[in-house]
Image (cartoon, rainbow, N blue to C red; front, side, top):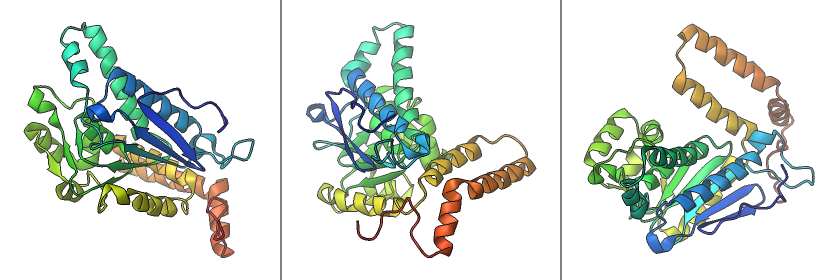
Length: 288
């Protein structure tokens, strides 16, 4: 995989790559970036394209031409709202669809959320206005979420007599059992302050215009961290989430993982850099 490969062909969202950062923007602002089949498919293509060209997947900082592989993905939306959820026309049409067609729609949505949640890069979201239903699911799948004061997030499916089932595992992991249970039953909108309190968002910016400063600060911190350590941290969390063996076996597994990372090329570079009082090779130099 090379970074100068052709970008995915999209109409309802766009991808811009700047160094090791991929910027993804939803551009369906006329309908508040509602998720229809086309937008979902385009987002999946972009997420999978960027994942394949990440440091975490390639285990290399640069491709064969010396172009940086990806370490961060930033997701934004044009217009007043981040994402109003699933397109109402798509949901209405589901009533006339066969069970097989509805299952394919669910599989497409699941592929979107799972591929974003498990992306090997550090993912950042800039959320303005509302993030409802599937939009709330996107927020839950991101590693660091920056909202603005008027942001409202909701598991709004209950208002339509349906369930936040496909997005459920990701929201549940993000905000916990009690909050997921309460908010999926009420289907009410959560303000930015409450979203920050329960961990649905991680930071509140003064306004959408100040998102750029917040993103730059997070990425600056990220680039001082070993990129393989970022990806392995996600895998570590997944192991903890689904661990079913004994505590003793978990302790043995974590000791083995620690030994593996210490002996890796990145681990040795990080330890050497610390002892030699220099920046590791993955960290931007001071004069950049």
